[in-house]
Length: 375
Length: 263
Image (tube, rainbow over all chains, first blue to last red; front, top):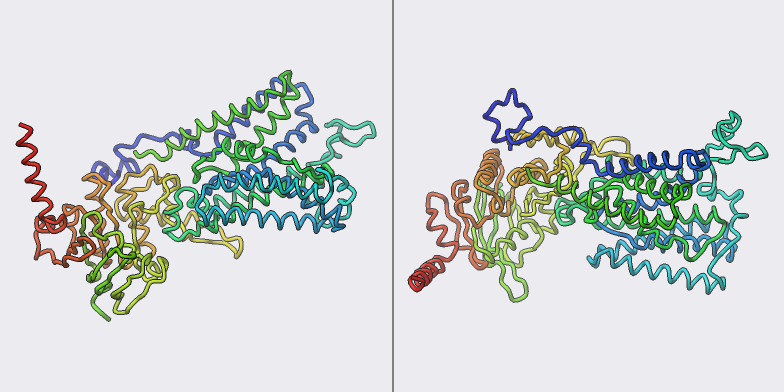
């Protein structure tokens, strides 16, 4: 490249190759993986702002509602995105959610464990499942698609069978009374920033109940976790050595191994984090609903992967971003809730989800070609 | 201390009944470029992997800076300063130049447990190093995929040197390159050697090897046909030794026959 241009006019053409076109800053921006999802999220907000602006969708209550849904999906989508960047899939996310739910509920309700111990138990199980997934993929060299598909069935089946064996039913209710005074449960069950909403209510800026308390009581725990995980993951991916290893492991396994990246360890770590993220999701939902259901989390793995793809992750690994997945989750959450405020039949949501994903994949594929093509 | 930085004495490697290498002997001084020539299946790959510490020799010994060494794995070889640049270059095309340059060996900064990848420092070093070989990195955060084949090869070599290579093992560095790109890479290899590195250049392209090599070792079917200094051997002689001269002579006769029948 510039070895050639050196002789031409290196003073005027500093950093300027004879065969290099000027790259506009727009082009540089286009190369960011999360751009598509960010643009999509803005479009979705504009759309609902026009279509449903005068409904309650953008009231404090309405917004918390769709951010809650987005955040729940976002928690698993971010973990799924990290794993996809690392070059693998986890199809057992949804089943892990159901499994984690009963890992909390059965010990707490039937075995008399304190709630905090059950929660720790569920997270320990998540680490074991994730480790097992990762180990199997790394040691056998089988595609993670197959390994975790097997785990999808095994975990869901075990969840159902064990729950029915121990409790005689498929739902375990009665958790809500245990939350109070528990040393850990508040992490997954407390609305935060309540004072903001009380203040906003006192200023008559948001809707109040008849007893004078605000309709929107506080930021749900899912949103706090979502923001925390989005920041943490982005920091890990872009700022740490481990982040570089994730990109390397997903981009070229052999190459990474040859320069000393512990690819196996990186991948196992990522599988553990998807299982742990599923358990965070499960804990929040189980404590919110007050009951665990064996079918909880069904198909969530596919929604998580869809959000990650919309967020710019390549299915082949090595490229993507956590923030992108977060925006992907916000798009899906906003549409799935926003559709209630419009005249559109909610049955159409899945059509939207699929179309969005298809557009994202085509767009991402184009971007990848742009990034990797030789000049 | 021996004159030679690396020596192979009668190294053999067997895979079951297959003799992959038999009694290979070669030695190399600092600043020298030795070209390892051989056709497909001559045992080049096995020799590279033996050098890189992937395979342990079944017979013979490897002597590095006068000491007999047994590598326990690729990391051992790397720690001894033997850096192998494989054909796939171990570069990830979707990642930036800097991220590739420091892949697996990222410089860190900050407090313990919260150490971050010092990307500014890494960018600076990567740009500087690439600049030294005349490749202007306009933006060290550009993806490696946007670089030409020759530039990628240079990046991989430059990375190996930066991380303390004393012996550079290059596996077919020019095989996928056009004439211009190949000459850029070869120039860089000569420059690296002139700074005191020992280079083992593995290739089947005599035309690339001959201008840069100080000595030539020819492998054929797992055996070394000897090491020759440049002044002792001609390009044509090397070529015929490598391919097994009779093979080519036979081919020529056969081609003549085909041509005769065609007209």
